[in-house]
Image (cartoon, rainbow, N blue to C red; front, top):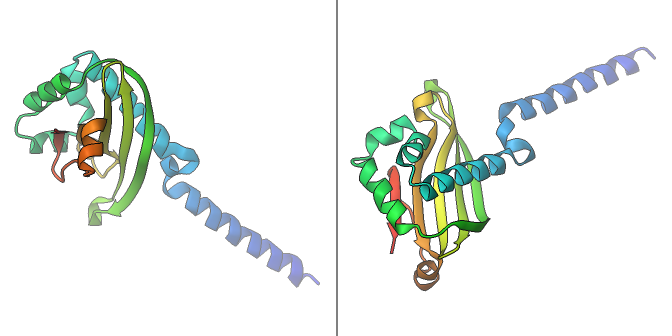
Length: 171
């Protein structure tokens, strides 16, 4: 009879360990954490664009990404000139989270998001990619942001963005 409580205790310990490991592995993926990070990133980015705060925009990019961009200041200026109005609302149309190993360095957690944004003057789609966690602090932050007017997106029905870091405008 004593074997049964022992068996139940061992089974309970195994189940608790499995559950705990799954929850510890990637905290931001639980409870919509990736969506919260995406929303906060978008809000901070849009506020900086609308305030013409070039330094704030630049500060959101990963240092590693900035090192790969030829002329970030010019890209920021072009983006700010393209964006018109004050944001009225936005809607998240897609979000994905990738977790990948970089060998001995550790793991990356990257979110890729696409939003429909309506301002007082225009409708846009904005897509961005951000390393939420990375092996080094220099690799954490935004890597790329793309923007297209909703009208242009509907006419062309094309995806937008790039595989290299920077700010992109599709016209």
